[in-house]
Length: 232
Image 1 (cartoon, rainbow, N blue to C red):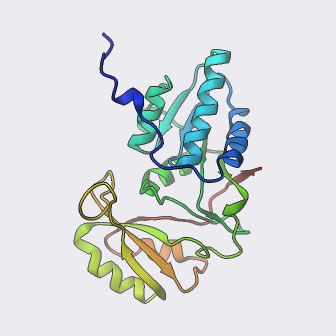
Image 2 (cartoon, rainbow, N blue to C red; image 1 turned 45 degrees about the vertical axis):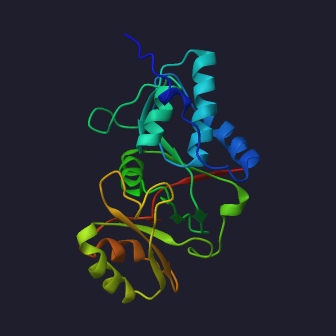
Image 3 (cartoon, rainbow, N blue to C red; image 1 turned 90 degrees about the vertical axis):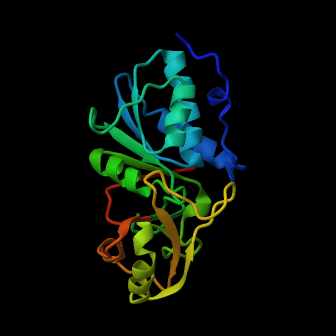
């Protein structure tokens, strides 16, 4: 049977997409890499959404068979709307993975995960032998943290401890991310909170330092991954 309901099929990206033309151009580049039989890890965010549009168009036009491994509920819903079958890391390993980023430094270190999906994104990224980061020209920085705070996913019971320990690393500001369409803070898919942290300077090794704090689930610092950066 087929559901007659329409609410899921009307899902749209909720915010205006900045630099859309550049992002669509780089989305077209990643769609060119799709081959029949690919298992594709799909990151979260507006660039990944545009890439999925380009990929689904190619899949339909060329009648390809692909499998997507999404990193968030919104990506899973988007894949469903576009007719792309999905799986999980329990049942399949991605041939390659793509995602966007908020910042990229000269060493290909990233800040990303502002959508709160960094835990799943790192799982799928590490599982894939090839990783592609899709960015427009505004994302390149000389030093991580120039434009964006680093998001950190934290167990709700550990908020005070994590804030105390982060202060030892040198921070300008720690803020709990508040929700826009609900009362209270943003809650991740795993039921955790997000702290947006502005460091005095993000040093090499900070990703491991942050992860070593009890109560930290994951951070939006992606450092030392083997990545290929695709841009316009």
